[in-house]
Image (tube, rainbow over all chains, first blue to last red; front, side, top):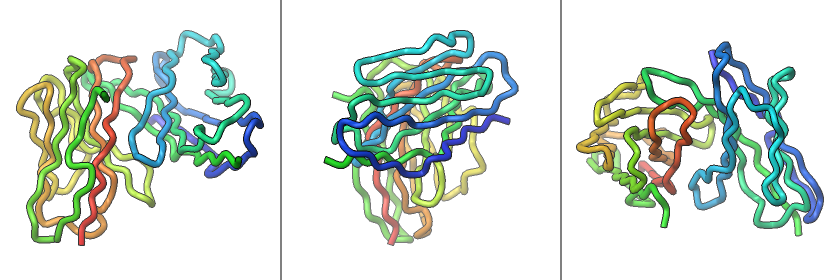
Length: 116
Length: 113
């Protein structure tokens, strides 16, 4: 069975500090996809990144970076020089292929608060 | 403009009311989803539609009734709900094959009184 664990329930950091959000996953599939979503107070889940199981290259997008380690089944997300606008709940998710359709298994989320 | 739009954004209904949530996607996707997010639980998948056919029903009570008249529209009909059904209901869509990103709407905040 698929499972995603985000052990950090809440994190608070002062603006401009770097912060890393942890994500550990479990799956028996050899082909799978990992995602990060951001949920601001408005409620919408905003897609941030998708990574497939065959691509272990780390990715950087502006202040955001992702570290995918298959050996430890982790897909961690780092925000560099955090800003108040980064305050949100962040979800890690794992895709599950079921009857030809995409299905996401979500972690419980990490609430990130950036203190000005 | 978001690719997945949901209406209404906020809904308050009594336990004897009948209401519907509406979702429309403008992304040309062939799969649509309803997720439920409540304060005490992680995101829960409720229903999956692929090419307008329901392919998954995650043991959702019959007081929630989905409808997918075409690949762009998805409804969630609500009747005789309970206060514990108060939650954020998120609609999403994707191309429906492994690895494609699922895009979410802004959600409908439902309060049952």
